[in-house]
Picture 1 (cartoon, rainbow, N blue to C red):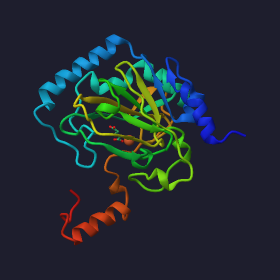
Picture 2: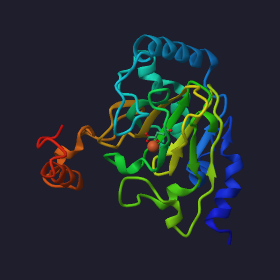
Picture 3: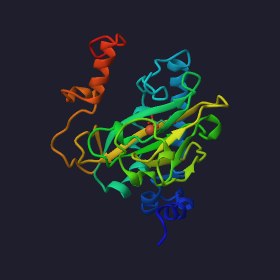
Picture 4: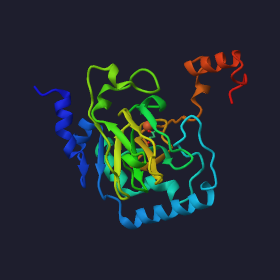
Length: 270
Ligand SMILES: O=C(O)CCC(=O)C(=O)O
Ligand SMILES: [Fe+2]
């Protein structure tokens, strides 16, 4: 019988194209949709980004110290509602069925203020609610090896949640998942299982790498923010924001307590 790595390698050449294949996605944990967004739509998003960047970001911005690539400034229309574009929902319906909600929408960018690498990780350990989620990454620039494009460890989502949050050491496992760094053009997008291991190198050529990252999930998850397709399948909700408040004691609260005791942090959460 073929090994899981043989199956992942066999599926990889089919993980990119004009038609989404949910069986390939289940093997590889990601799928690259090529030229799938209508050009007029992408051009409107690019123009909105350029105006927003020139007016509000180019002179300096509030870089998130915990994750520099994650933009903190709030997005203007139409960038703030990109996730409503039908092609994303038509694609994700093939994974989740018809009832789909938004978990989060943000931009992850590499410009002069955040040119650095992003260490190898999976996103599931940072999410609240159910684990059945995926990211849709939408490039508004070219994204490749030279400007800090993302790499994916094909099949690694099959390992599930690894028990902690942080930088994964791929050499600590017997199994070695194939790493791919696809070049993306505006008009393409990538669907990624939130448990898939991914990373990105530094921006070496200075060409801005601009990606939207919308996280979608089935509408039965009580952390849903906005219904995007079908109907809600939950009658209660809670916020995924500032999750330390949900704990009387936790790993993060302990670190904060120890840092305060060492004089490294103000006693109250900042
Ligand atoms: O921007 C990148 O290259 C990756 C960002 C990412 O994976 C994250 O913030 O979770
Ligand atoms: Fe990530």
